[in-house]
Figure 1 (cartoon, helix red, strand yellow):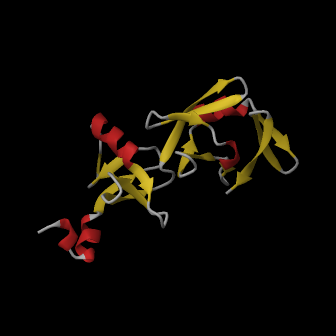
Figure 2 (tube, helix red, strand yellow):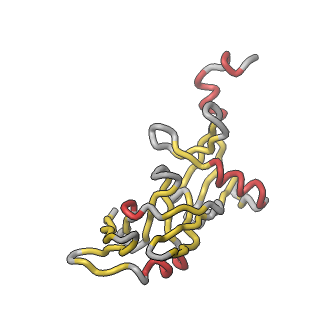
Length: 157
């Protein structure tokens, strides 16, 4: 039986993995933590969003499976400054320039940003926050990040 001939309901059922990503960036399956480092790295690389915003593990354009996410899809573990430009390193070992205008602060003061060109939400961990904090200033009723020659307002979620 070819994949094309499978009923849509069966395909949807097969996409239910039971994999959960917790707030601390740990994957869980059937009550146990996924500890195999190679598999964890693959899962992090596969994280993506469907067009409707639902989190998935994407293998390619047609093959994907659902993943339950407690908070953000990725974590920003560190920030490196090069002059006045900030580069974030996420827990999938990718590095990119911080998308300054994507910064958001939650009610609990947690900072978030977008990564993988504005696609995925990442939570900025405490060590990374301290690396950014040196460039954060009070402004009227909120905060701004001074970087890239500009003042970037940190939105509230």
